[in-house]
Image 1 (cartoon, rainbow, N blue to C red):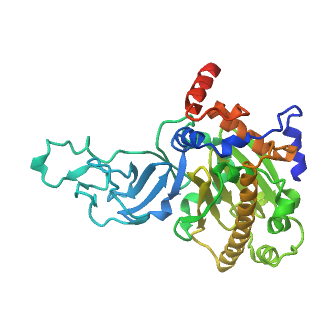
Image 2: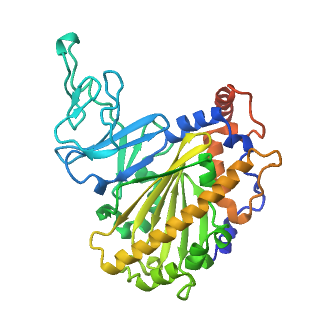
Image 3: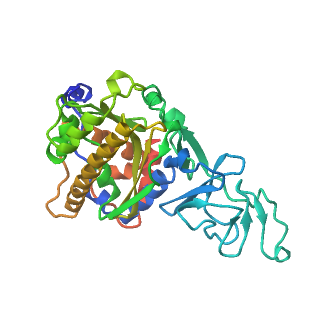
Length: 401
């Protein structure tokens, strides 16, 4: 289905303006985004295959929060705040590894079992009696969906992950994600000098593929189409263009990719993307599955995080195809990074007067609508006075009901 065919679902009276410039430069707004988006919505941590053995752990830091996911001696995965109940130190300092015995806080030596219960403290007579459960590590809300581990730091507007992703369930199931294995450790990419929303703005539309991404356009540009965000998720799908391709990586990928018989015929030579509000994408290919997400470090600093997973019974041909698809993705990410820098720096220019969205960019519009629903203050065309954004947003939310 060509991209233009999806225009049938686009209203003809929608507001073509994107978010105002100030929403990309406001420190106060970033504080609200941290609270109402990143802490209150589901975040992907990793895949169960990243933590195969008892004691294996992985940590995730974002927007002032610290998560720890660990596999217990009983084989169960659990998620906790990476925060000692004594003085708030990290109980695990590394990004990943294996805990052979107990979790020992490096500050004062408070010790926790892998199930989070407090095992003991240094100089116990200097403290009142502490109940092991009550004073154990604080648990995090966690859910596993097709092998992907999600956590949520605070209660939020999203339903369970299973409910959130229900409309994609039948399409995703044949990929067998839960049984996949990790290719490499979850990777934190380089820092980019942009507001995090600039990454989402570029990623939420395929209008730019023909011009900006020669590799993707050569692979599937003729048939790529986006579906708007709806109740927290979006979908993009592209079957491969006919013919061998012009670029060597595309020609090679198409030639070595074996028939993915576990997938329906419609998906054996196609790439599928599922966007998850506010900041994650799952990419499903015949040769692999990956996720990527971005996190704000500051109002003008963002870092990407990603991981790739492969089939357990991967053949040599499938491994070669996975290498080539990853190469196409890496080049695309570099191209997108430059686009985000140019787009984001424009919001500080005196000439910037907003954007004019094409019908082909309705995915950006629907994503912005999700942001407007959570943070109605972004509907204001001018930046509120410093220090007043939170109060104005609260009032606008109350008025909306």
